[in-house]
Length: 134
Image (cartoon, rainbow, N blue to C red):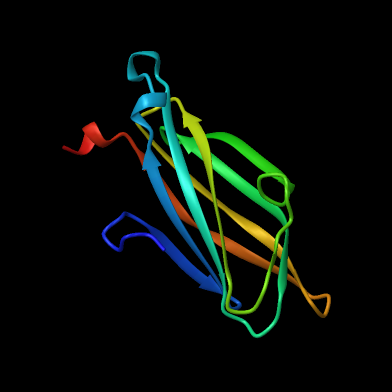
């Protein structure tokens, strides 16, 4: 897991803990062109006693306080992972915004072994160009 001093956002719902580690990508950004790139690593921890399958993601991305994009689709990174009890599934993705400050939030839909559906919120997290805050 990540170093505890790293900026992160975490939330637990229905026995599923979602932790987000956002990071500014200087090498992929160009502030003179209003391009600010970020990666975010998501750790999905199954704290239940049963397996869950991640079926769908729903993201809302804001840039400069305005709605930029909404993304809904199956799974993450082209897969719908099953996460056993006590296991952690982790992946990293990226996004680009047009302002030095933005935000992402959303939810995952999971199906349990017995066929129940869980809508688990992804904690809202900030995307910020680090120079703004120095």
